[in-house]
Amino acid sequence: MRKAIKTDQAPRAIGPYSQGIMAGGLIFVSGQIPLDPIKGEIVGQTIEEQAHQVFKNLRAILEAAGSSLNEVVKATVYLADMNDFSRMNEVYARYFSEPYPARAAFQVAKLPREAKIEVEVIALAEA
Image 1: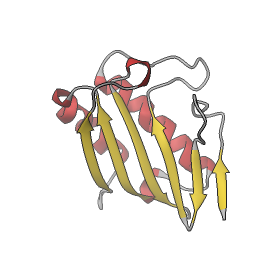
Image 2: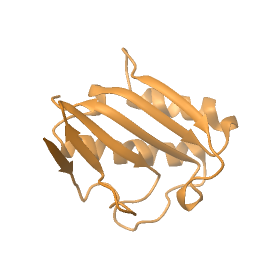
Image 3: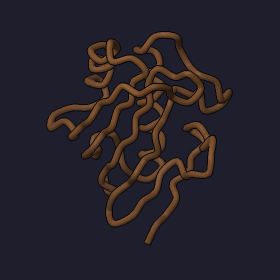
């Protein structure tokens, strides 16, 4: 059984997808860019500012599903510039603790709305 996760505390989907889907004891959260959930605008100019907003958005979706960032088992980070990797890592470490989720990070040609970062996660459904 699949269940859509929806919250006003994170940006609305800007395309034909769900903020998150709960299925098989897991929560699959769609990639989040640094959008303010109210204004729908990019938050921040620096990778640090944008990363904080991304993790706030992810946390809101997971909490709406009854889970948390502590339950994340896999994260995928997309960066517009791999030179931002170490600064992104500093912010990432504030939101996750050991044992850290498995993770992949990629530089991509372009992200929606010229964002510097997008992150998607998979988490356990029960916190």
